[in-house]
Length: 287
Figure 1: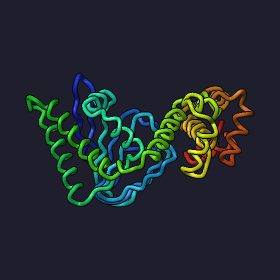
Figure 2: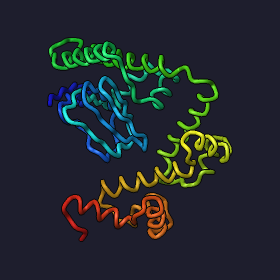
Figure 3: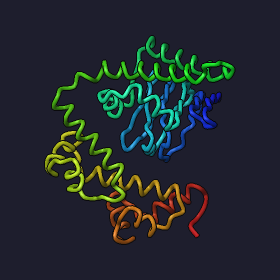
Figure 4: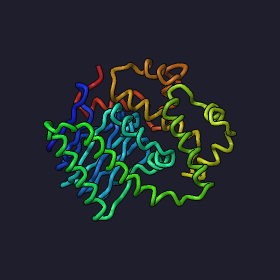
């Protein structure tokens, strides 16, 4: 699997991984960088913040910094590219194309499919980007690389806007509320568990917030918050050696017993049972 790295200011700014039978992402993981996957052949199924995307050939997927990749399934004989941008590089590129509509659409529609001709054009942009990364003697290498990335992202954004900007005004307003709620939950669910807090932060009533969420997926605002808490709890239990008491405290539960009851009511198993399963899968046992 080929890997191509562009370094600037003594840091890795871009890494391009050639996907050839495997992908350089392990789940569960919280993304600390900005990721763009271009899938040429094969299929990838990925769960990002409880949103499942099933990638088909000739498609792209954006993964933003801070998002949690819970599950990842890769078919055999896949091929494509996985591009990783550092937060600093991402910020520089974003400042040249910070359209509120484009940013909103990317958050709501990170997955995009393309025709054969359209995808071929995107793929040629990636090959050109690789060529510039390899050409370390190019006097204007940083500039041309940023231009190529800029053009690639604009081409994807253009396709997205053509397909999704026909939403009616009311639907767009409700989607903005859902997206804002989703972002608030991701950033605050380890401290705030009450629907009223989120509604107040958004300056809307709890009933109106619940109505919008229920119309969207048939669940409730409470369910969205609970899912986020469970997702963070599972992440902490997978990625750290924290005790269950410490995890309970980090997630703002009054005590470990309260956390245990909450976890079991939402997953069907206790935190100890969940963690034991992790150790069993790794061929170990709890001390």
